[in-house]
Length: 347
Image (tube, rainbow, N blue to C red):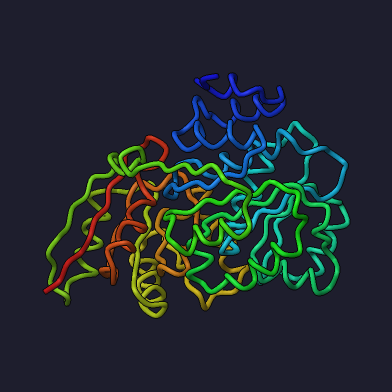
């Protein structure tokens, strides 16, 4: 059978209603491949860049098969707190008419808050590996009831050193389960992880030509290092970005640049690793609700951020590697929208 749209996938009516209300007109390439395979019960290994609809690729099949009120059935592992929160919000919004509760569990948040959330018996938990390990040790989360497991941004989790935790978590899950893995790359390490813990997975890859990178306009400006801030302000004034991500190399540079922009009257905020989780959440809420039009960030702090609408990305400092450049600039021009990526290059 060929699948032309969400309505051809034999989904519950409540799920189709939520998909429609979220404005998903038709499946993205990775959704078109991954959702039918997962609905048929296969393990899925998907290669796709951020911004190609990965969350719905694994969220929709799980939501369609979860039984409300049956307790914990799904676990989604994410590399960062920010991504865990965003994925749980997305899954909750897709499951709004299904009486399914999704809980985010991550480090940096008081564990007592998570205990209260667990008392509501969530059907799905979205978590960072370290915090799940904490709950396993406390015996506050029992993984033996799981039927669905997802490793989201698996390459980032391995890069951040989570492989031993992931292996321990998966060994504590039932052998009879459906496992999905999504990653920007399917390196040998990722494939070996799949061989070890997945059951004959169907492998799907969405090439860069099918992603939204073609919607991004790239340009660079040669600047005098002494007048870099002045040049940046001129660019912001001319472009008047609705929502702009500015990348710096260091936490100190991020704080300094965001502070200068605020003093000059721009609606700017900072995001870096020295901020507390509540500070980071506060800044992200303001940026998503358009109360901040400019977010200055480090690469590490921006890892896993899933922001649908970013009109401009500006590299105030050049990244150290080409793949970081691609990851940064891929934050704009998503979901069919156009975007602009600007890089400042000094001598």
